[in-house]
Length: 502
Image (cartoon, rainbow, N blue to C red):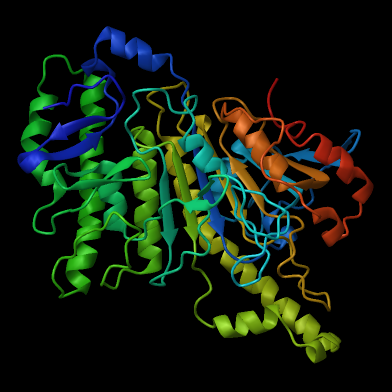
């Protein structure tokens, strides 16, 4: 049967108290409940944080017709993507980026404040921007949205936050990108690593075996003996034959159950084929890597499928994915090239060879992640938003950034951990709130301003303090426009110009 609820999270109920979340079916709700839902603003934020640095000339489109835009403290230049022919850029060579070029926004000239991690490496944490050398002293943007009554209206019972880490390693928690600052300490939000746990968390589980983590109920077990979808077939048939369900909702229900079946079969087959060990219980804590040979590539592929489906069914609106993977084979050579010895830096021939090696390697590295980013964008753009006009991508913000900024790989010094020209790729329209289809360079601005702009686009209020602080960032990076730093800080709660629509 369909669980009677006024919110968007609807369920099929199976044997043993099993629930499977299904998409929003308007024809099955009362007029009052439907009116309430249609009046709620709906938006989403999906974040990809990838490791290492960026080579801007590879990632950004080249040969753009730039126009200078006067501004009191930013040195702004911008160009439209409309007339780009061929691949979008050297790194973003998947055809989907060219197809969606008018739904893409690339921001250049973005720097992140110094942050010292556990390994003493300054790095961006994507959704927070603190200049304090004492570590994180703020709440990341995804956690702010998770707690926001404006972003999540009352009665919403989906997963208000979905944290995922893609990693070949068993335990890596120091780079967790999502956190809450209580005023005295940082509380990191849970991240899932096991695709089975993510599936169960988003789409259903056994209701009498659950606990609460981060104020959300997390199901503990997913049977390896019987697929979750199999448990609700009778309920599925009953709902499909209900006299109130409309033709479009029948199609949507069929498509959803089929997609769930395909995803879970894919997960199940990998575990069954690659491990002879007894079935494992899925923990509600950040789970250990499953004892199977599921490759990192297969994990990412499955995660993309699940995220697109969950976003489309309004089962979550905030998803943060940290990729703690990428260059694994030959990492030692990569690391030695990125951080050459003092003697090697004095040798021009070796510096040029190092630059050639890194230039080619980082293009491959970008393309590796671009493949999956493109797949997710394509799925979101191809799915009609059931709650708004346009596609899911039109009513979402996809934000892709990197841990470090631009690296001039042909120079003699090592700037692989510098924070200048941080990768800032945005796609989607946030419900028509932002201007896309262009490249915009501010000369010098900060990640803080990007986050404030995104928050405003998503309808999340930002106080006078903005997001994060700046510390002594400008002095430490010796920015060329240091004299403009005071103006930027004075306007730190103000969105970046020429992005938000009037």
